[in-house]
Image 1 (cartoon, rainbow, N blue to C red):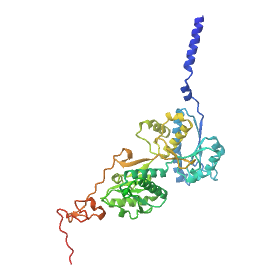
Image 2 (image 1 turned 90 degrees about the vertical axis):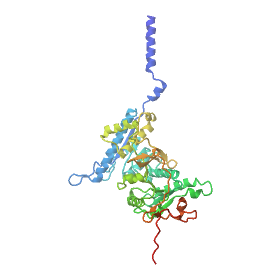
Image 3 (image 1 turned 45 degrees about the vertical axis):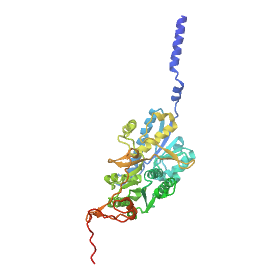
Image 4 (image 1 turned 135 degrees about the vertical axis):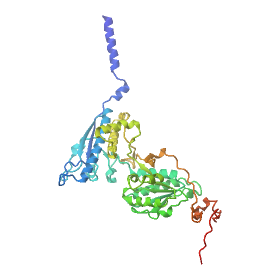
Length: 447
């Protein structure tokens, strides 16, 4: 009897040991508080229809964007739920009713931990003071004026900051073309701030290389051409076939006419060697031809790019397809990764079990105790009919200057004086031309 009692107690102790989790297991199994999201999107549910029962075109487009963002949120919430992070989502219409009144109240915002949206600028201006008063975290999915973003560290702007992309581009150009002539087309239009930033960063990098006498000539500062949103100014005077031409334009969609003029100018100088660095929006300009982009090694800073070739992200993409029935666009991608990032910050252990679409957001504060900006840019070059990561592309071969022969007289086309030292076979050290073998005698003008 005593033996049976001892054996029963031993079995109970063994079972208890098997059921009690270890310290590490206890840490992983701690219940996580529910993350509550308030998502404000422009559904326009109370927008009046036009005659014939049609909705205004703007409302239709905003609804499409809103649904895309919502699908991204749903896919992110699904991932977080599987990772053990419960999320409660309250979707609200940011579009005011027919009387101009918001369709959400202080109670909706007060209950949430994080507010996502609105997307429209005028609605952000209305809700921002309320969010700040309640001390809630605020995620912005669209580009907004500085006064709506710089409201403290509780604000996170998910749209990639163009200024950071241009600064990264300037660092690359200075590192790879520090002895080439780099020309920036200045438009002084809507993107004047980007043009100024590129010039400042490039020149600072060049000056840092001035260690001895003569370095300022070898590592020259940026050459600028005064253009406009419609023209490239006197860019032709800065192009030459006797050295590599590095042309930079960081003006975007508002300067489409300038980019059309730039394309024409480079085509007219088809005997020259070009490397073109541009604003990210140039990738979506339909008039820029693919074979020309490849010939000019067109390079852009791009972001919000889905990692289609990364096998570790297939599950995340498939979850979105299951929710939306289609592949994600840029709005869905930003919304998905923004909510996923908020969930991971709420429960850091979930980072091991969730996967973003873009490869993670890179946060940076431009000023102390300021808002957080997404600076996840990647430099890509157009090659093989696609945008390839620049760090996977081979280095550009060294530029080899060449002479040009006039077929009518079978003689060398005169080379500008500053480049004659590159052609010792055609010019004496003092710049005097050497007769070209087989050149026909030039006809003297008649008296």
